[in-house]
Length: 338
Image (spheres, rainbow, N blue to C red):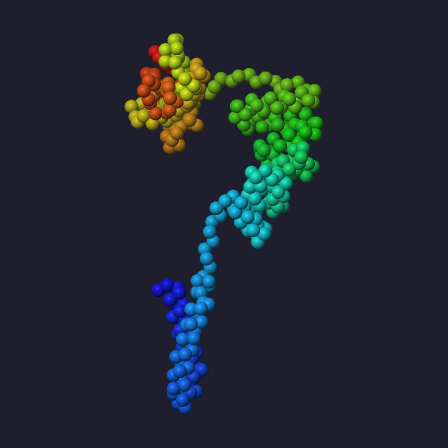
């Protein structure tokens, strides 16, 4: 039974009950009038309902999901007006305003989140960053610097707080302070990031009239079961014979000996980078459930793909497989074209 039919039946039943109660005194003295009232009142109720009634209006219509970013943003703003205690709501609003290039609104939204979560390091740092981005000169103000220092006092390993505080110190002309603030980051970041960071530290030290950091002596790479160093090169004259174009790539693959062709580690490089030295490790695994460190031996191959696709194609060149036992201390040399 549909809501409309059910509502109509209920209206008729209620009308009939009311009519009987109203006409009950007439049932003996005037049976015809009693019958007329009992019939007419329900009919009038049905007619009135047909003209103006709508049971669907009593059922809340489901709210449609926002179709655009503007609608979603409006919904979020309305929700925060109703309940301004939503920390993550203000945080999300701040990020949305930042993406829309509205830095002042982003700062204000993060300020609300920071006020609600004074002990949340990430939110405090986001507020400090948003404040600097809203400044015409992109400078950290005194409040932001104080927040960054408070975060580092609680959590000295917080990388973004340490990076931003160093920027603020350098903006203020304190190159030595910036260098001291940034130096602990070198032990927390990867080798590539550390090299870039050392450049920034040396520049800050130069501003302060200090010499560059002492150069680091190269350390011998550790031998790990989940690490394989590979050197890949082309047989002399091969490049001129195959004439690879700009799309040509070299895939260096480690796979299970005698197993499926799916690699347990793979890297892709441009042919123009040859010869190249790479290190295959667990981070190069396309399958999180099967890694180099899980194996005792692997088979290494290098494939030159003329199209640049991972799938083997016509004209591609693949080296002979080299089986190695893990761990291996020395780099494995693969020469394509031999």
